Image (cartoon, rainbow, N blue to C red; front, side):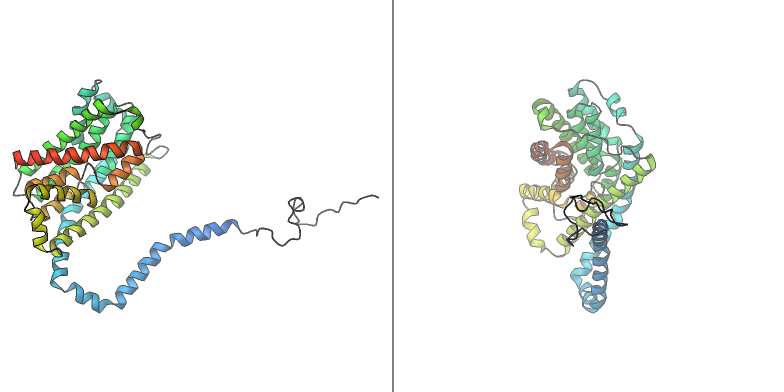
Length: 357
């Protein structure tokens, strides 16, 4: 018996019967693809929606909020918060702009040519070179990764990683402004930070292993124009550093206005405990190095040595830096490098403060 093949109707899918979905009614709708787009759009609308709800809530409860802000504790809190932000923002913006310009327009190969070939000699030179790179620790991590990728010895790159956010001109100028009555704080911060950076570089050269370090695979701004890379770097650093500055200012205001003075006095009155307390606080707050001096200056209950420890530890190891170092160089590196940096920074800053302050 002959079998007659029926031609498919207009618009029918010839392969539909072969796929086993003919007439089943379970065929995937033609508009399935845009569903993901709608879901993604909904996700993008979450932040504005939350902001709108927050503003509406504030309007609805404006009388209780106004009454709470009029309380003496909140007045003190707002005074400290605004003072820290107003003092720190100009340095943060200037540092971000300069850091982005250097990261984009200065080739990493320049640093490789400028460093000595011998690693032991390259470490102090790279540490001192950190003084000419304005920017916060968020910028120093990708720059250090680029140095390793371009052939710079890891010991020198790590010394640069630690020194750049701690001894650059923006940070030292901000420290001088934050401590106008204690100019020796600028010298103490410079000396202690450079000593820690060089010591960690030499320590890595002596004890570090290549399998602990996983250098980055590609450049941060590969395939992008100079202008796009510059403004992308500016937006990234402003978003991250500015956010942490706000958190740090809020924490400093809270410590100043809410926490009873006798509580802080227990930690501040003990030389060793005060140093450890502010070292741990620097790790937890994760404040940008261009603004941390103003937060430290507001902690007047503590000694200059304890506040120096806060300024030395923060730019070298905190929560965001640990995550960035792990992402750039590998978790095996970060788990060894971060604790050693923290311990050495605490010891060196305490000794430096004892001598210079």
